[in-house]
Length: 221
Image (tube, rainbow, N blue to C red; front, side, top):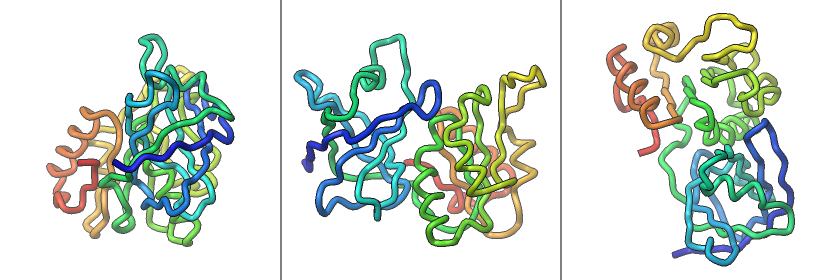
């Protein structure tokens, strides 16, 4: 099994519970935007505790980057990442993943499900191919929106936030079949979905019911 020990170059919190890790990039290590690898912490007893995370950098970058939501309170893997900072080491493995860009369309993300789309959208920006792409991004509150300013800069009004518990006190919204119907077109657009498993399953079913061919729905298999 491919394995690389990589040094952490920099860490920072990008929201109250999402931490960005910038890492050394092994020579010859490549991936396609939207792909992931298994990650573990290079500390005694943790080396074999592997968890999948998506690259949020570009393949052409001279470093690797992960943007990871930290779940506190149950001593899980991401909680241990709070104590991983510059100078520490992570272990990464071979690249895998089924979410990659097939053509313009609608990106539908729930919370940390945005992460595979970060690299894809950044690559589309670099290639001047952002036209025709829209993001529906579901979060609990406005404070949970990952890289909000960058998304606005890349997509403008085609970055659409769906907030279930707005801090303003306004009624909350969810990504549901009625909302999807407003964005489903007869054109051959792709529909990319990533988020919690029930979120992905429901929206996939909704899109099929709205007449979207299954081959135009892209999810992590």
